Image (tube, rainbow over all chains, first blue to last red; front, top):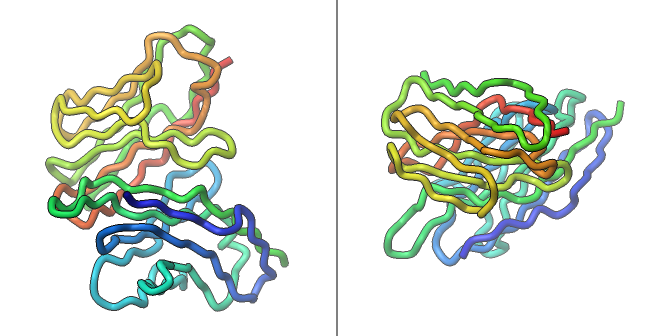
Length: 118
Length: 113
């Protein structure tokens, strides 16, 4: 069965500093992995995803994530934080069943709230 | 391009009243559809998902129900609301047979008093 753990429910950085949001997953089959962002009172917006191929994935708003199989991690980074990056970020893994493929469902982490200080 | 709509955007209802939230998707056919709830401080909880008209899977037993009367329409209902039903309800869709990427609607904020 798949699972996702996001380390740190709250992360605070200064404007211009590196953003690092941690995500570890558990999966018995090659995972599909996702990062979503949610601004207050809005739906979730896809930032980036990894399915197959290149392990360093670039997304919108300058974010990127690297799939590291040996560490079962998919951490989200951005070199320089902007005030507009303040939001909640969710990591997710696809529910995939060995031998039958995907069920189409995602398992979400509990989210990390990012604060950006001026 | 595909778009997903939810309404109403906000709703305040008394305990014991009925509920109907609607979600529609445009620009795609045969999507998988999902209902999630976000309660304060509790992350995303998958409530229902559907792979086709009339096909509903429930993830969490509760006083809510879902229906899919048309291919791109997904409805969340309740006969009698509880205080614990308050939260932010999100509808999402994904392409059947795709990469499982889900695309979310703008959400409905439900407050039960």
